[in-house]
Image 1 (cartoon, rainbow, N blue to C red):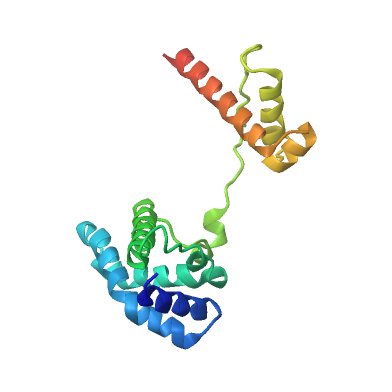
Image 2: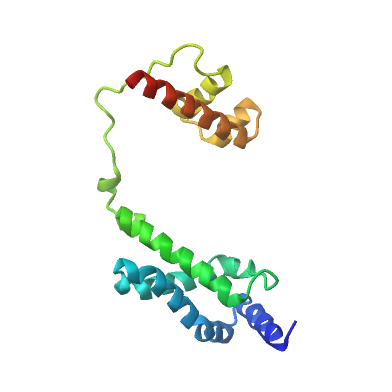
Length: 184
């Protein structure tokens, strides 16, 4: 480990302890790397006006939840600048995806826009006998008719939540294939 690595380790250690001077040094030292990565991602999409917002999102992400993300940095796996570039790229891509879908922060959406009226005539889907295994049918029953979440269904069935997710996925795959073939 070089002296530079020692300095970086000390800086990061002070930073995660909440040292404002360390945070300011960290930002001053690495803002250019974050800026370059974000600009490279946003500029081709004509989103130059968003660069500063995304840079701020990167730094907020780094210090969120008691510096949880920074605590995951491993100098044995990558240089800090490389790691920061990955974090900045990821944040910029997430930003582009949100913009593409027209997503707004949920807190800024009026509740009236989020409400959905129940359908006047709910459609009852008839699942042919024997298409699904009994356990797959039970999972669909619990998740959709009883409106249980995965953890509740797993506890009721005495299985791991991942098993419920897997059975749910397999059941939906069978249903899609069946109804697609019926449609064709």
